[in-house]
Length: 116
Image 1: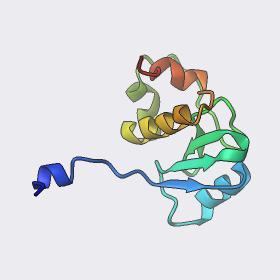
Image 2: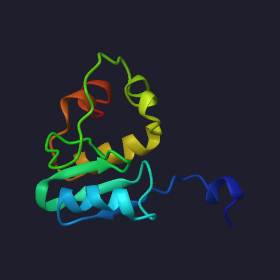
Image 3: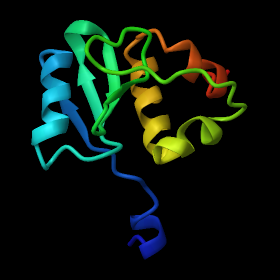
Image 4: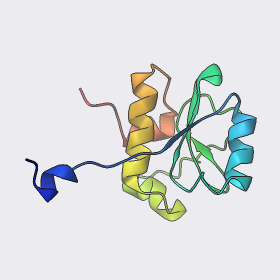
């Protein structure tokens, strides 16, 4: 039998799949089920993003999603803290993008490189 700490020793991540980045962007504006930090998956455009009022791509391809400007952040925390993203949500999106073989946006790749 699992203890409570074993049963809840995971982090659930919500992933929303869309046909286009335009659809993903629109859903962030009007669908109350798509909330800040959820992962946006657009297979046809090789884009993984993070839901927000201004959804952000973590992949090199962005489509209609926004990009984060490189302000010289030294860590993932420094990069996403001003935007209010949870580091775990960003890491989950990056992990999915890498698992699918999508190129990562250089800004994210610099502060959160793939584990060797």
